[in-house]
Length: 169
Image (cartoon, rainbow, N blue to C red):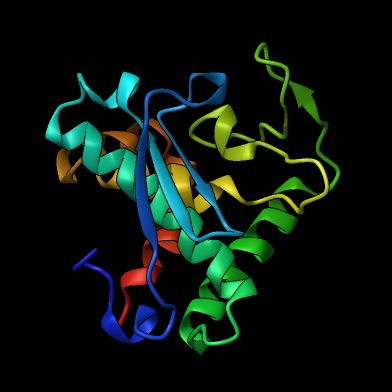
């Protein structure tokens, strides 16, 4: 978390980290915005490389930041602007798109994201929740992997740029 710009997060308060034996749906991690708690699955992470663990941590940190931008009254204007960019990007990309159903039973809008999960929809919530999480998770795998993702998905540079704009000063 030391990579985050201090002025972006200094008033958000603490985030808790928990490890449970396993999580629902075989997930590696989850974030609960009601308690500001990131939970990791011991069953999953016990075999992770440091790089994989860093990626899942960034996935959950992105959820913390995304939700904090809206729910935390002390969120910085920069964090709120970052979320607004993500939400606007989601709205422009998914307008008129068809909702699909993943084999795991959750709904999503594909729209060419780097994975179906980036387009995942949650009941009762606006879309775009997984964009920063999926894209920061991929970026956390390192510059070589990020370059490969950008090469494989050249149309996703804008989405990566928006997610990574979090680190702009």
